[in-house]
Image 1 (spheres, rainbow, N blue to C red):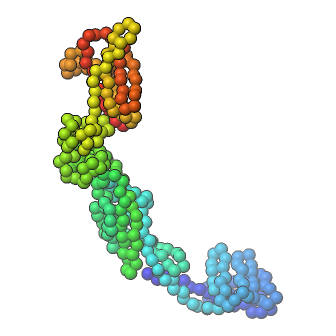
Image 2: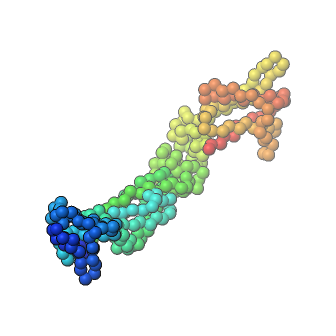
Image 3: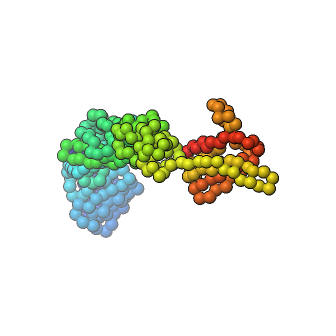
Length: 301
Protein backbone atom coordinates (compact mmCIF):
# COMPACT_ATOMS: atom_id res chain seq x y z
CA UNK A 1 0.00 0.00 0.00
CA UNK A 2 1.37 3.46 -0.90
CA UNK A 3 0.40 6.77 0.58
CA UNK A 4 1.12 9.97 -1.33
CA UNK A 5 2.02 13.26 0.28
CA UNK A 6 2.06 16.42 -1.84
CA UNK A 7 4.84 18.77 -0.92
CA UNK A 8 4.71 22.44 -1.84
CA UNK A 9 7.53 24.95 -2.15
CA UNK A 10 7.85 28.46 -0.83
CA UNK A 11 9.84 30.86 -2.94
CA UNK A 12 11.63 33.56 -0.96
CA UNK A 13 13.54 36.30 -2.75
CA UNK A 14 16.55 37.91 -1.07
CA UNK A 15 15.98 41.45 0.27
CA UNK A 16 12.34 41.33 -0.67
CA UNK A 17 9.29 40.12 1.21
CA UNK A 18 7.90 37.99 -1.58
CA UNK A 19 4.70 36.01 -0.94
CA UNK A 20 4.59 32.28 -1.64
CA UNK A 21 1.58 31.56 -3.84
CA UNK A 22 -0.02 28.84 -5.90
CA UNK A 23 -3.44 28.16 -7.33
CA UNK A 24 -4.58 26.89 -3.94
CA UNK A 25 -2.76 28.92 -1.28
CA UNK A 26 -0.92 32.13 -0.46
CA UNK A 27 1.64 32.53 2.35
CA UNK A 28 2.27 36.17 3.11
CA UNK A 29 5.44 36.74 5.18
CA UNK A 30 5.15 39.30 7.93
CA UNK A 31 8.86 39.40 8.74
CA UNK A 32 12.06 38.37 7.02
CA UNK A 33 15.79 38.44 7.70
CA UNK A 34 18.38 40.50 5.89
CA UNK A 35 19.05 37.83 3.35
CA UNK A 36 15.41 37.12 2.75
CA UNK A 37 16.01 33.47 3.61
CA UNK A 38 13.89 33.32 6.75
CA UNK A 39 10.30 34.50 6.82
CA UNK A 40 7.64 34.17 9.43
CA UNK A 41 4.11 35.18 10.30
CA UNK A 42 1.64 34.39 13.07
CA UNK A 43 0.96 31.01 11.47
CA UNK A 44 4.24 29.79 10.02
CA UNK A 45 8.00 30.09 9.95
CA UNK A 46 10.11 29.18 6.94
CA UNK A 47 13.90 28.99 7.14
CA UNK A 48 15.64 28.08 3.92
CA UNK A 49 19.05 29.38 5.01
CA UNK A 50 20.07 26.18 6.81
CA UNK A 51 20.42 24.02 3.73
CA UNK A 52 18.78 23.41 0.37
CA UNK A 53 15.55 21.50 0.67
CA UNK A 54 14.96 22.48 4.29
CA UNK A 55 11.65 21.46 5.87
CA UNK A 56 9.09 24.20 6.53
CA UNK A 57 6.49 23.45 9.19
CA UNK A 58 3.70 24.90 11.27
CA UNK A 59 0.83 23.68 13.35
CA UNK A 60 -1.20 22.79 10.26
CA UNK A 61 1.25 21.93 7.46
CA UNK A 62 4.75 20.87 6.57
CA UNK A 63 6.54 21.58 3.36
CA UNK A 64 9.97 21.07 1.82
CA UNK A 65 11.52 23.94 -0.08
CA UNK A 66 13.12 23.46 -3.43
CA UNK A 67 10.85 20.65 -4.65
CA UNK A 68 7.88 22.32 -6.29
CA UNK A 69 5.04 19.96 -7.11
CA UNK A 70 6.93 16.91 -5.83
CA UNK A 71 5.03 13.70 -4.98
CA UNK A 72 6.64 11.89 -2.05
CA UNK A 73 6.16 8.10 -1.62
CA UNK A 74 5.95 6.65 1.88
CA UNK A 75 7.16 3.05 1.68
CA UNK A 76 5.69 0.21 3.77
CA UNK A 77 8.40 -1.75 5.63
CA UNK A 78 6.60 -4.14 8.01
CA UNK A 79 3.37 -5.17 9.67
CA UNK A 80 2.68 -5.27 13.41
CA UNK A 81 0.16 -7.63 15.02
CA UNK A 82 -1.77 -6.77 18.17
CA UNK A 83 -4.59 -7.90 20.48
CA UNK A 84 -6.01 -6.24 23.57
CA UNK A 85 -5.48 -7.74 26.03
CA UNK A 86 -2.83 -10.30 25.13
CA UNK A 87 -4.66 -12.99 27.09
CA UNK A 88 -7.76 -15.13 26.51
CA UNK A 89 -9.57 -17.68 28.63
CA UNK A 90 -9.47 -21.31 27.57
CA UNK A 91 -12.35 -21.89 25.20
CA UNK A 92 -12.67 -18.13 24.73
CA UNK A 93 -11.89 -15.84 21.80
CA UNK A 94 -9.79 -12.76 21.14
CA UNK A 95 -9.87 -10.44 18.12
CA UNK A 96 -6.49 -9.97 16.46
CA UNK A 97 -5.55 -6.83 14.53
CA UNK A 98 -2.70 -5.60 12.34
CA UNK A 99 -1.18 -2.33 11.16
CA UNK A 100 1.07 -1.50 8.25
CA UNK A 101 4.30 0.25 9.29
CA UNK A 102 5.97 2.75 6.93
CA UNK A 103 9.55 3.90 6.63
CA UNK A 104 8.75 7.15 8.44
CA UNK A 105 7.34 5.10 11.38
CA UNK A 106 3.77 6.10 10.68
CA UNK A 107 1.16 3.35 10.54
CA UNK A 108 -2.21 2.59 9.04
CA UNK A 109 -4.73 -0.03 10.10
CA UNK A 110 -5.18 -3.14 7.98
CA UNK A 111 -8.41 -5.04 7.67
CA UNK A 112 -8.08 -8.25 9.70
CA UNK A 113 -9.52 -10.14 6.75
CA UNK A 114 -6.59 -9.07 4.58
CA UNK A 115 -4.17 -11.00 6.80
CA UNK A 116 -3.36 -14.69 6.40
CA UNK A 117 -3.52 -15.97 9.99
CA UNK A 118 -1.99 -19.15 11.41
CA UNK A 119 -1.06 -20.73 14.74
CA UNK A 120 2.68 -21.04 15.22
CA UNK A 121 2.58 -22.78 18.62
CA UNK A 122 0.48 -23.24 21.74
CA UNK A 123 -3.17 -24.04 22.54
CA UNK A 124 -4.96 -21.86 19.97
CA UNK A 125 -7.49 -24.16 18.34
CA UNK A 126 -8.02 -21.89 15.34
CA UNK A 127 -8.12 -18.39 13.87
CA UNK A 128 -10.95 -17.27 11.59
CA UNK A 129 -10.41 -15.47 8.28
CA UNK A 130 -11.30 -12.23 10.06
CA UNK A 131 -8.67 -12.71 12.80
CA UNK A 132 -10.81 -14.10 15.65
CA UNK A 133 -8.60 -16.48 17.66
CA UNK A 134 -10.17 -19.30 19.69
CA UNK A 135 -8.34 -20.93 22.60
CA UNK A 136 -8.32 -24.63 23.42
CA UNK A 137 -8.48 -26.06 26.95
CA UNK A 138 -5.37 -26.02 29.14
CA UNK A 139 -4.38 -27.41 32.54
CA UNK A 140 -2.36 -24.31 33.44
CA UNK A 141 -1.73 -20.83 31.98
CA UNK A 142 0.00 -21.58 28.68
CA UNK A 143 1.85 -19.45 26.12
CA UNK A 144 0.83 -19.39 22.46
CA UNK A 145 2.20 -17.70 19.34
CA UNK A 146 0.12 -16.65 16.32
CA UNK A 147 1.44 -15.50 12.94
CA UNK A 148 0.10 -13.07 10.36
CA UNK A 149 1.18 -12.58 6.74
CA UNK A 150 0.32 -9.59 4.54
CA UNK A 151 1.81 -9.46 1.03
CA UNK A 152 5.58 -9.88 1.64
CA UNK A 153 5.42 -8.95 5.34
CA UNK A 154 4.90 -11.19 8.37
CA UNK A 155 4.85 -10.82 12.14
CA UNK A 156 4.17 -12.95 15.23
CA UNK A 157 2.26 -12.19 18.41
CA UNK A 158 2.67 -13.77 21.86
CA UNK A 159 -0.57 -14.64 23.67
CA UNK A 160 -1.37 -16.40 26.94
CA UNK A 161 -4.26 -18.85 27.30
CA UNK A 162 -5.57 -18.68 30.87
CA UNK A 163 -6.63 -21.76 32.83
CA UNK A 164 -10.12 -20.55 33.71
CA UNK A 165 -11.42 -23.94 34.91
CA UNK A 166 -9.13 -26.16 37.02
CA UNK A 167 -10.99 -29.38 36.19
CA UNK A 168 -11.81 -29.46 32.47
CA UNK A 169 -8.75 -30.90 30.70
CA UNK A 170 -9.43 -33.85 28.42
CA UNK A 171 -10.25 -37.12 30.17
CA UNK A 172 -9.16 -35.54 33.47
CA UNK A 173 -12.18 -33.23 33.41
CA UNK A 174 -14.92 -33.16 36.06
CA UNK A 175 -13.40 -35.76 38.39
CA UNK A 176 -12.80 -33.55 41.43
CA UNK A 177 -9.05 -33.42 40.89
CA UNK A 178 -7.13 -30.39 39.68
CA UNK A 179 -5.88 -30.94 36.12
CA UNK A 180 -2.41 -29.56 36.86
CA UNK A 181 -2.06 -32.00 39.80
CA UNK A 182 -2.95 -34.94 37.56
CA UNK A 183 -0.58 -33.84 34.80
CA UNK A 184 2.19 -33.32 37.36
CA UNK A 185 2.03 -36.90 38.63
CA UNK A 186 0.56 -38.83 35.68
CA UNK A 187 1.39 -36.83 32.55
CA UNK A 188 -1.02 -35.70 29.85
CA UNK A 189 -4.34 -37.52 29.52
CA UNK A 190 -5.43 -40.18 29.06
CA UNK A 191 -4.00 -42.21 31.94
CA UNK A 192 -6.19 -44.57 33.97
CA UNK A 193 -3.81 -44.27 36.93
CA UNK A 194 -4.90 -40.63 37.28
CA UNK A 195 -8.57 -41.47 37.92
CA UNK A 196 -10.05 -40.10 41.13
CA UNK A 197 -10.73 -43.55 42.63
CA UNK A 198 -7.50 -45.16 41.42
CA UNK A 199 -4.80 -46.13 43.94
CA UNK A 200 -1.62 -46.30 41.83
CA UNK A 201 0.74 -46.59 44.83
CA UNK A 202 -1.40 -49.28 46.53
CA UNK A 203 -1.37 -47.60 49.95
CA UNK A 204 -5.13 -47.96 50.46
CA UNK A 205 -5.85 -44.27 49.81
CA UNK A 206 -7.19 -43.23 46.42
CA UNK A 207 -6.10 -40.23 44.34
CA UNK A 208 -9.03 -38.08 45.44
CA UNK A 209 -8.13 -38.57 49.11
CA UNK A 210 -4.40 -38.01 48.51
CA UNK A 211 -5.11 -34.87 46.46
CA UNK A 212 -7.29 -33.50 49.26
CA UNK A 213 -4.83 -34.44 52.00
CA UNK A 214 -1.77 -33.09 50.13
CA UNK A 215 -0.05 -36.45 49.68
CA UNK A 216 2.04 -37.96 46.89
CA UNK A 217 -0.16 -40.34 44.88
CA UNK A 218 2.78 -42.30 43.49
CA UNK A 219 4.61 -42.87 46.80
CA UNK A 220 3.30 -45.65 49.10
CA UNK A 221 5.15 -44.06 52.04
CA UNK A 222 3.13 -40.86 51.61
CA UNK A 223 -0.18 -41.64 53.30
CA UNK A 224 -2.45 -40.28 56.02
CA UNK A 225 -2.51 -42.01 59.41
CA UNK A 226 -4.76 -41.55 62.44
CA UNK A 227 -5.36 -43.32 65.76
CA UNK A 228 -6.72 -42.95 69.27
CA UNK A 229 -5.17 -40.53 71.72
CA UNK A 230 -5.51 -40.75 75.50
CA UNK A 231 -4.14 -38.29 78.03
CA UNK A 232 -4.49 -38.68 81.79
CA UNK A 233 -4.78 -35.56 83.91
CA UNK A 234 -5.21 -35.10 87.63
CA UNK A 235 -8.95 -35.76 87.47
CA UNK A 236 -9.60 -38.24 84.68
CA UNK A 237 -8.41 -39.80 81.49
CA UNK A 238 -9.25 -37.84 78.39
CA UNK A 239 -9.48 -39.31 74.92
CA UNK A 240 -9.23 -37.98 71.40
CA UNK A 241 -7.44 -38.59 68.11
CA UNK A 242 -3.90 -38.18 66.77
CA UNK A 243 -3.21 -37.85 63.02
CA UNK A 244 -0.46 -37.06 60.52
CA UNK A 245 0.59 -35.34 58.32
CA UNK A 246 -0.82 -31.94 59.19
CA UNK A 247 -0.25 -29.32 56.48
CA UNK A 248 -0.55 -25.57 56.93
CA UNK A 249 -2.71 -25.11 53.83
CA UNK A 250 -5.33 -27.70 54.84
CA UNK A 251 -8.24 -27.46 57.26
CA UNK A 252 -8.82 -30.35 59.68
CA UNK A 253 -12.14 -30.83 61.44
CA UNK A 254 -12.52 -33.58 64.05
CA UNK A 255 -15.96 -35.18 64.24
CA UNK A 256 -17.37 -37.47 66.94
CA UNK A 257 -19.95 -40.25 67.15
CA UNK A 258 -21.07 -42.67 69.82
CA UNK A 259 -22.47 -45.25 67.41
CA UNK A 260 -20.72 -44.98 64.01
CA UNK A 261 -24.16 -44.85 62.38
CA UNK A 262 -24.60 -42.67 59.33
CA UNK A 263 -25.97 -39.30 60.34
CA UNK A 264 -24.67 -39.61 63.90
CA UNK A 265 -21.45 -37.68 63.29
CA UNK A 266 -21.18 -34.17 64.72
CA UNK A 267 -18.32 -31.70 64.93
CA UNK A 268 -16.33 -32.03 68.12
CA UNK A 269 -17.27 -28.98 70.15
CA UNK A 270 -14.85 -28.84 73.07
CA UNK A 271 -11.23 -29.84 72.62
CA UNK A 272 -7.58 -28.92 72.97
CA UNK A 273 -4.97 -29.22 70.23
CA UNK A 274 -1.28 -30.08 70.47
CA UNK A 275 0.91 -29.93 67.34
CA UNK A 276 4.25 -31.67 67.06
CA UNK A 277 5.72 -31.05 63.61
CA UNK A 278 3.44 -32.73 61.06
CA UNK A 279 1.51 -34.56 63.82
CA UNK A 280 -1.58 -33.15 65.52
CA UNK A 281 -3.26 -34.45 68.68
CA UNK A 282 -6.84 -33.38 69.42
CA UNK A 283 -8.14 -34.14 72.96
CA UNK A 284 -11.88 -34.21 73.68
CA UNK A 285 -12.52 -32.07 76.77
CA UNK A 286 -16.30 -32.06 76.57
CA UNK A 287 -17.28 -35.52 77.83
CA UNK A 288 -16.07 -38.60 79.65
CA UNK A 289 -17.88 -41.37 77.72
CA UNK A 290 -16.14 -44.68 77.88
CA UNK A 291 -16.85 -45.31 74.18
CA UNK A 292 -16.64 -42.67 71.52
CA UNK A 293 -15.46 -42.62 67.91
CA UNK A 294 -13.55 -39.86 66.15
CA UNK A 295 -12.73 -39.09 62.55
CA UNK A 296 -10.94 -36.28 60.72
CA UNK A 297 -12.50 -34.32 57.90
CA UNK A 298 -9.89 -32.71 55.60
CA UNK A 299 -10.58 -29.80 53.24
CA UNK A 300 -8.30 -27.82 50.98
CA UNK A 301 -8.52 -24.23 49.76
